[in-house]
Image 1: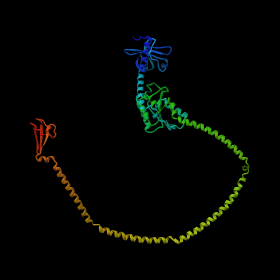
Image 2: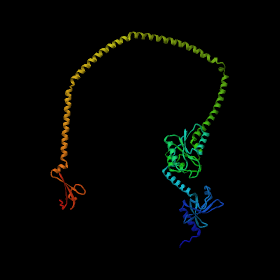
Image 3: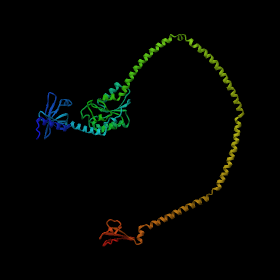
Image 4: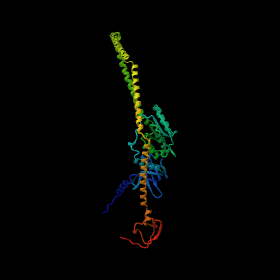
Length: 469
């Protein structure tokens, strides 16, 4: 028997299947029948040229709208399908509403976000660590906006000795994305900074769109210098925020983040100085007490009692030192007298004369030996005989090469096809293909052929074929 359902059961079944099938949907249409209830909930109809559907935007999601929609607005909504059981009608529960121009930008933004996320550009493992003590901060923003003034104000108020380089760019409008990407690349090409702050003040999605361009994201991703993104207000998010190494909610916060480690160390140094000061004061007080105690000691009150034993010791040391010096001088005098006797016995002038005589004899011996060797070498060297020997060897080599060349010419003539034709042979060619015929299998009756003889060509037509097996 066919199951009979109540209206509630049927509606519940439709609700279950419909809502589970369409979890999150995006719908484009025109608003009509707009109503704002006192509860803050918004009810209206989405329609196009042929169809319409009811929609509701509850107060919890409506508070994010920058303005209330009105009849005739073209919008893109995100939500889910729901069945309203009391009326038995289906409707869209809207979680997010964007006006059509803005909605298209949001769709482009989401598509680019998904694309770059798949590439791994948002992965936290590839994000660079900010330098602890940056000496130079690079800023990519408008020179006339409030961003650079906020950054300088924070740095001047909280830090000293910093160095800021501004690369001025357009932050919205045509060409803004290209200028931003080029500025980041220039900072990297010339290694001008230790950390970069890239951003602008708040604005609409259209105003912030330059920071949602892929070329800006690529420049941030490829930057060797760590990048802090400070685009818009704290609630604004851009593609640059996701790709950057650190996202700052505001430009002022970006300046504080860039110098965070420095600020932390300055705070630590301040605390350390306070602790050192307290320790030094305590130690100074303790030392003063010790000094007062020493002043009252008898040895300090009469210092001569401490010095007198040392004065006597000094006198003893002086006497010992004088005796030691006298003995040392006596030993040196005796050594000097012995050296003088040896020097007189050696007399360098006599040694020089002996060496001169030895050099004279050695020079004569070397001269005689060289003359003898020269005469012997001269006898052995015969220039005419050597020239004749070289000429004969060259003639032998030329003769061998000439004989080899003649043999090669003879061999080449022997294998020259033209010489074979002189012996009564001929070559058969296809007239059309202009290729050599090697077998009767390549010929058919009435084929045009060409016969090559040693003194000319003969054009023939095939009348009959005989295949030898």
